[in-house]
Length: 569
Ligand code: ADP
Ligand code: MG
Image 1 (cartoon, rainbow, N blue to C red):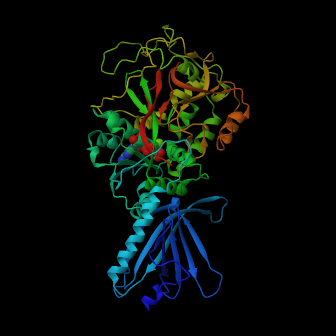
Image 2 (tube, protein in one colour):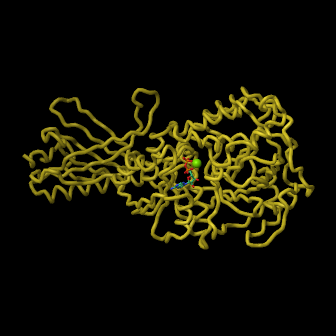
């Protein structure tokens, strides 16, 4: 019987034949060996066609760009002489009970039973599985004009999971959604569950990186921030940054994961669908360059950031919404509504180096910022013009102070519940840390005035200042529509005081579709810059870098294009 099933048919290709680069074979169904299929494999597709007595043939074409892996195996039943080929696809399919499409797993299996010898059948199955794997690895969805690298194969991955991120489900999500996919793609991984804040940072600072082909973060953006800064603390930071970094959304703030998905130009995805998409990209292993931003704080600490620098509304919402962490990503919406209800104005000075100027000046005119180990004396309260800044600045502009008291916004800041949260989330470096990295040729010392080529923003009353270098600030906030992972740009947004609550809400609602810049809001300003400096005048407040609170005070930053590498489609 087995032989019959494989008997060559003169009207079709010979079994196992390779004709014009196409592998051809006839196999049987996994459940019913009387149902036969003709199977053909080209570089781009696996085509399976049912062979029936009737002229009508059912044909299914699987695009190999959707395939993460394939394996050959024997049946559980030892008596079965046949071998099996199972290929794993993640295809775009209509969502169940919802509109649009999302990647969904499709397993395709056929049975190889050419002869009575199980070993020969298994060898043939392995030949097919290996051909499907080889072609699939080469078939990766790529965008025109993007320069890609690939992770080394076989790829050994360290997966770092923060068990407390998001709703505390990162580990469970990894087990249910990612683990199987990595097995299907034959990607060996080592799971590291972080035990405390800065655990990942310390670990990558000391790790033997020659053992790893990729470092993957299953958490929110905070854990990747730790990892990047841990890598920057290594003596071999330049080499260490060549290790591809992957992101799997497991937190409540999954901005990079949302951005990575967005760069693939696939339909929008959220929650588990976003996780599946990022897992898929990890299995495919395409690598692009990632810009990093060097951030200097008043205490002379230097940090590296991949996502954002925020002050005012956005930073407050990020940190205040920590208390709604149990609801997941929707915490930002809740935080936004709460903060809108008591809108604050923040006083400070903002200056930036516009891209046009940076291009005109070459790499920039500033004397490079001295390395952090050089002693340097400067006052936290010096302004860009060298004049002392006022120590307090009650907010006169806010219309939304508590009890109608114009100073009550000031009180709100002082009395805000941030302190405990801040203490928990402050991005403090471990005691022995020393961030290295390239010199910041665009930045003078924080105590020096900014160069003349910089633009000084006239306004001093802000609702928010946000520098972002990825497309998304959260899963549903498409903040910088034109941003790419390696565009060499800081996308600087600020909203000046005087904006009404409904107008600000409209901006955030429009941001879901990346349409906020088309709202015609006179208070919203957008600039593409290479460097910026922010000097808050309000005595207290929150500044975040990649969603992590950093010390409050003067801060400046510059972009370093293509410093790191990111697994991305
Ligand atoms: P989320 O998006 O849910 O906030 P993050 O990845 O941003 O998730 O992590 C939140 C914070 O938790 C970060 O400051 C990170 O450094 C810290 N962290 C990482 N691992 C642990 C751990 N095991 N216990 C406590 N905090 C941790
Ligand atoms: Mg976070």
